[in-house]
Length: 332
Ligand code: ACO
Image (spheres, rainbow, N blue to C red):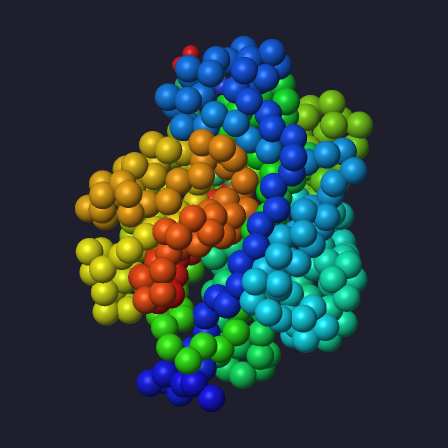
């Protein structure tokens, strides 16, 4: 078995996959729904269009397609999967876990299954969690999926939020690797900022009633500018922490795969890390903010486009509602 100096197994990503719904919603389409403009959305966020799931598509439907692509890429059979972790804030239902629906669709009978709630940082959290299970030897592989149908919790009357989000899924298969793999990882949280970004109703605090629906409390609420101020700092700090843990410098990074919340956040992050823009991967223009699916699909697309090669140092860096944040450094 391949072990590092701490006598744990090295873990890497051995396959990736994605699925984006067919329907494209452009800024011009949004101009017909709320008081906004392509100019405002483009300059304030960098988003031009986003994907919207079909009415009959739930989160698990998107996830299964991304998962099947990742399993094929990894050369792993669903029947051999030992762990499935789904990162989502838009599960099919409050319970059972979306991971169990996905297990059923994949036929992954042997797998342990659960969901995690870490919003936009969910995919990176799930990778770090899966890494722990595999490095200790409890499981020999894991499927992690970052997946969202944010259109189902978006208030299409609120121009402050409805222009930002999209739907999609990205998946990764993790397993022990002989060299490289995840070099370091870090998770952080600040619950004092929990009010900044939430879906207030539908849980035990405000169970769904006619009143909560009338007050539109079943839709995502966000204090965008407050989140913006914190985002750059927590992402930059997380990056510095994982680089230091891995014994690396910013200049060692070949590509950053950040959460895609706003182009201005990503450009500020690049500046703070003293990295040229071409070392940061962007897919926000085409897909908007897909929460946990943003980092997942960005990783998949970067690999497909040849932006990540064997031996490259890749930084995954994300933040989201909670507030929570997560980063890891991977040698490809
Ligand atoms: N079209 C036109 N005008 C708009 C729109 C719109 N779609 N939305 C807001 N405005 C207006 C506001 O009403 C405001 O007008 P006012 O000055 O007359 O009051 C003005 O634009 C500026 O509003 P701000 O909110 O200050 O705009 P800001 O520059 O902060 O940009 C944005 C807003 C894009 C939301 C930005 O703050 C942002 O990206 N924040 C971070 C979001 C984020 O990272 N979320 C975390 C992840 S999401 C998750 O976890 C699910």
